[in-house]
Length: 73
Ligand SMILES: [Zn+2]
Image (tube, rainbow, N blue to C red; front, top):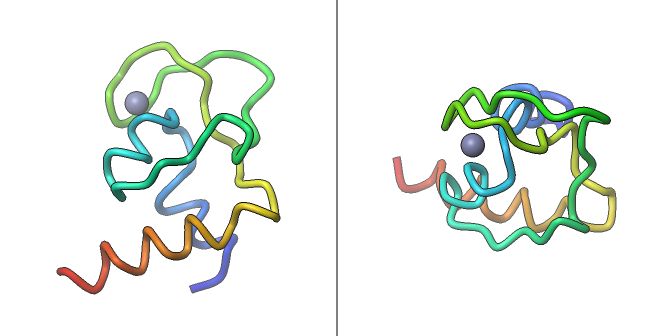
């Protein structure tokens, strides 16, 4: 999977805590880039800072979390 696909399918329009919960990751706010305005998380429905991407230096964390999750299914 490419990063752009991963972003579209797993990360976009969600808040950080939902991503952390879904993939059992411990991403810190500095790992991510956010939309410039608050929005409704498509996962928990709360108004929150919505993730727009992962900073390049932190992408390995996301890959690790997502691939672990996928291998369990
Ligand atoms: Zn959420």
